[in-house]
Image (cartoon, rainbow, N blue to C red; front, side):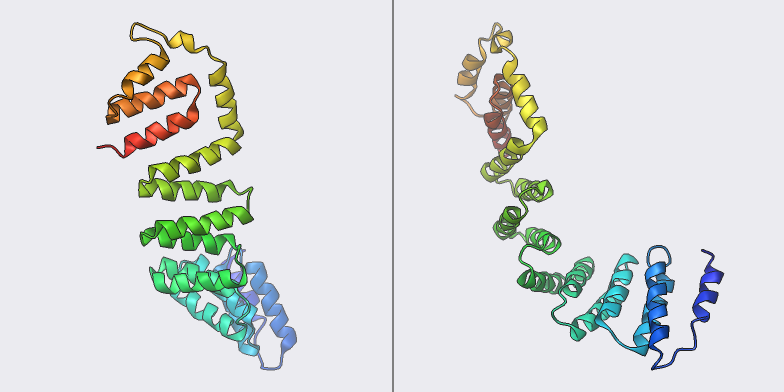
Length: 256
């Protein structure tokens, strides 16, 4: 839609009066229509509607539009108005938290995400955002604990488990990282197909002048340097023991 036509259309809705609720409804409908592609015009509509009669949903919509525009400060201002009008509408706190996280106000972001989780303990967005904040603060155990609880509530959400694995991997906790990777492996059809394939290959084909796979593993385990740990991982992978392959590879990561 042409910008001039939009402005003309908006002007046709004026003048606005305090008691014109019918005009207010038209402004809201127009704001909803323009929200997808004409954010500034949608904000004008919702703001004009709020001038007639304030409503927590109007300020919430305005705040969301400012968040979409990356204008996080104006987003917070409007979202806080929404929350004051309806403290029980926790979605205002959720978007406020996202705004504050973009503004690098970690304390305020964390407070808002916690407020959301007090209303909705299994809210994926709030819990995921809070876990990332905790990770960035070096509070890995708290972050993982939160994701473990969330994972129980959303058992089919592989993204939560992947995030937990990434956080553990960044902490260089090889034991917990290995356990998290194995959990994903057990639930992945692709991993299971690979396990089935590798187990179908006779281990004898890997025998050479250096011995069998079992003999190589025994030799490598006598001196667990980083190079040998990587070799152990490969040997166990070829043997079909992918769990051990994961363990030794992550151990190698921690060896200097």
